[in-house]
Each structure stands twice: as structure tokens, then as C-alpha cells.
Amino acid sequence: MRLHYDKKQDALYIKFNENHYLESEEVQDGIIFDYDEKRKIIGIEVLDASRRFPIQFRRQLQKHQLPISLTVESKVKNA
Image (cartoon, rainbow, N blue to C red; front, top):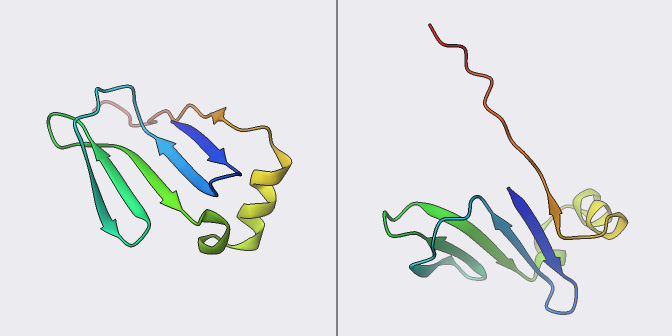
């Protein structure tokens, strides 16, 4: 998962994987989902991010150089 915050545009983009983009849909005012060819969500764009998130999150964005990459691993045990 990759986060990218564009301070000039005040937009946060969360990218879940590297699948090929097919289309976008604004699901709520300023919230845009990007889909792949199987209609799986591959990314979410949040416009006016500084007004939508709690102040603690905004402070964390300002402390780090973005974009940052996070690796999320599943810890599901095989039965």
C-alpha cells in the first residue's frame, strides 16, 4: 500500500496495488475510487484532505516525507 499526499492540491491518494487502472467513480463529494478491470478498488483519492481527517492524522502527514510505502501482510494461519 502506498500513500501520497499532494500538499498543493490538498489531496491524499491511497494506492492498494499496482493493478492496471480502468475507471474512476466519485462515490461521495471529493472521494474517488479507482477500479481495475475486475472492478476491484485499487486506489482511493481524498480531495480537501486537510479538512476531512482528524488533526492527529494531518500532523502525521506533515511530519513525514510523502509518498511513503507501507507493506501490509496477512497473518492468517493455514488450517
